[in-house]
Image (tube, rainbow, N blue to C red; front, side):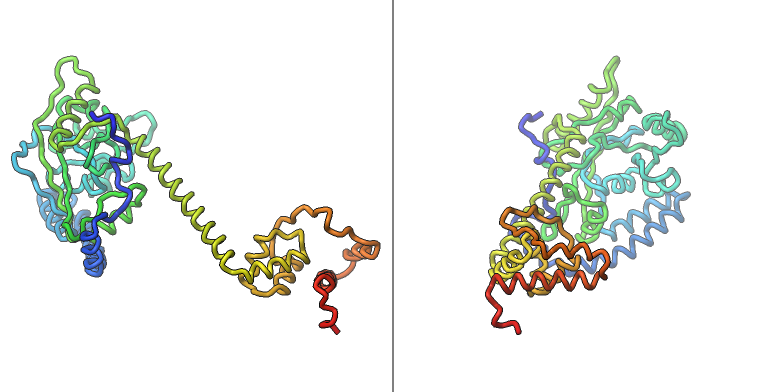
Length: 394
């Protein structure tokens, strides 16, 4: 176990490789990849229909689905020196959204899910853990699944979340040890062609995006290896048993174990996505300010509007001037209520209303158009007087 491993070492933040040659390869391949996505969407629909139609014929269904999956780009290969499947509970490392599909096609095992109901889940190599009460636990449901059918096997991913498989495993949960005393480790590795070496799973990526890029690449090769069954020794705890399974898988992959859990990864993901959102917000703000500085004419007109209507925030004035490009139109928009804003507190420099402005008591009687016309006229008179434009007004 390496104490220097952090969560960020176990995840990918970018979909694309960092080397120039691989990036150029993806750019050249991109048009073909898009065409492939379109074709594979139609093939996937047919594969789903075939899955449902042949659900009661597993001996026919699995070979046909394996062929169609190969057309979709999912290729499953068993490594050399792989052991015989000798346990009804398989335990594997977790790399992508498609791991359970590949291992279902290869071994006929079913992975638990809390998304689909039982009949629907079985179509896709999944066993539903949804129950009608809050008493039955997931381990109880999975034990019943094994007890009701002596031929089916269970596939579990005790990491609980995917990693990039490069540095270390997430710490295994004890869930498999609660179900069986005989656990068979499965080591899974995934590769893609060098000219389309797009990362499998990216932090914060949606399932739809993962499917798109899976269809985009020419193929994704899943290689698995079954290790020897690990049996619980007398009085061995669940934690010790799972530690032995975890070490067996990590040694085969030549990576380390860790104390990082799926909850640690989830916390890191939330923090990372918040940082991305904050950086985007700051970037947009800086872009806006830079645009204002690059357009002194907007600032000049904004100063004219502020002279007439000092209680209006400058950012409100600037935003409207960028659309209208006209001082008079912006003043009109402010006075007739088209622009919504919170008035600034008036300073002592703002002239107090004179006795002539006792007339606003009559505003309640006058029409809206009369009030609007009066306010616009007063604002224009102050503007003309301040800038000495009397000679231009007849």
